[in-house]
Amino acid sequence: MSTVSFKKKGNKQIALRVEPALEEAMQQALKADGDATLSAWIKRIIRKELQAKGIELKD
Image (cartoon, rainbow, N blue to C red; front, top):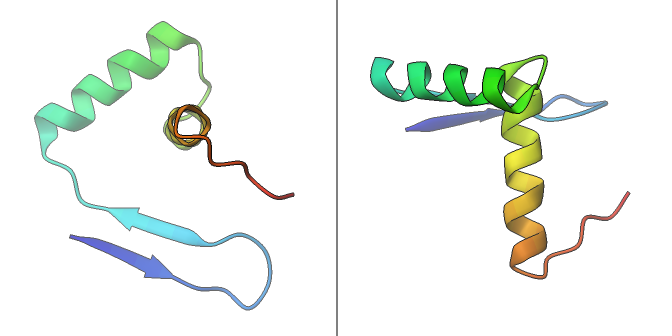
């Protein structure tokens, strides 16, 4: 289950519930990839997946 909280200004905030094993695996992957934070790692992975699907982000 995920929860999306909308702010009036700025970026959207998304809360995710993950089981401990998935969180640990994500922490290991972000360290291996050299990302500074879990959110930076998640955003990079999502952008990569969107690009692979031919979906361009609008700035």
